[in-house]
Length: 391
Image (cartoon, rainbow, N blue to C red; front, side, top):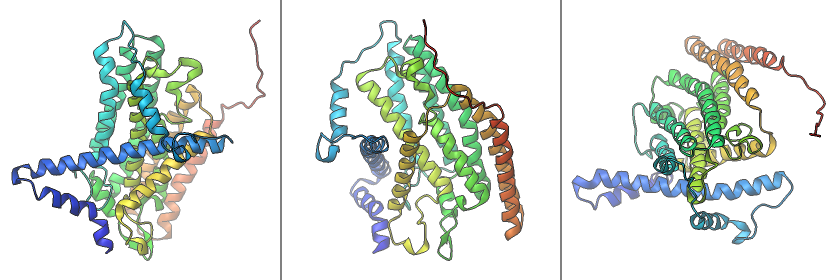
C-alpha cells in the first residue's frame, strides 16, 4: 500500500502517456511533468504569501489577511486580480523590450530550476549527470535579469539597486557553491538523484543525511545563510532598501510585471531551499527508518515548509544589515569558513570511522568559527544612538 501511494503520480503519468502514440510519448511525459511543476509551485507561492503575512502579523502582534475568503486565504486571488487590472506604466526613456523581458525571463529561469530537483522517488523532470551544475548555471541567469531590469528602466535608483543586488548575489554565490561542493566531494557525483540516493540509507532508525556530520552541518548552515542572501530575504534585503533607493531594481515596474518579480523571488527561494534539502537533508528520504511508509514526496514538501517557516521567522526577527556589514560578512567570514569546510570534508573522507574522525572534524569547524567570529567583531563599536536633526 505504501509503495502504491509513493508511486501514485508516477503510475498516473505512465498511464496517461500510454494512450499517446509512441513517437509523442516522451514529449507528453515531459509536458505533464512541466504542468505539474507549474501548478504545484504556483499554488505553493499563493499559500506562502498568506502564511507569511499571517506569521509576520503574529510576530508583530497584529492581524494578517483576514477579510477575503475564509480566514483570509483567498487574499492571493484578490492580489492577482489587482495586479492584472493595475495600469502598466513604462518610463518614456526606458528600453521597452528589455524592460518587458526582465520579469518574464526571471520567472522562466526560476521555474527551470525545478527540472533537476528530485521531489520524490522517481519524480524528477530531468535526471542530469550534472544536475547541480545546471542549477547554478540557471540561477546565474536570474542575476542577469536583475541587471536588465535596473539598466532598462533609465532610472538612477533602479540602476543603483541592480548593482547592489548583483554585488550581493555574486558575493554570496561563492560560499553557496563552495558549501555545495562538499557534498559533491562526498558523493563523487553532480547528479541530484545520486546525491539523494546516497543519503537514503539508515543505521538503526537514524538516516545517513549529510547534515549529521560536522562538515555537513557547517555546510548546511553556510548554504542557508548564503541562500537567504541570494533570495534577497531579510536581513539581506539590501537591494530594496526603501529609505535609500526606493524599491531597488524594480522601482519602475508596476502592475503584473511587478507581480512577476514578486513571483520570481519566491520561486527562487523555494528552489534554493529544495536544493538545500537535496544536498544536506536527504531530499525525499524519511527522517526515521520506520516512517518510510509515508510517500516520499510528502517528506520533501514537509521539509520545504519547515524551511519556508524558518525564512518567515528570520524576516520577522532580524533587522536589515548595512551594506558594509553584508559585504564584510560574506568575504571575511562566509568565504573562509566555506574553504575550511572543504578541507574538513576531505579529512572526514580519509580518516577511519570512529570518535577520532568526529573529534578532529568538529575541531576543524569550531575553532575557525570562533576565531573568524572574533576577528569580524573586532571592528564593532556598540554606542548609544544619537539622533541628529537638520536645523
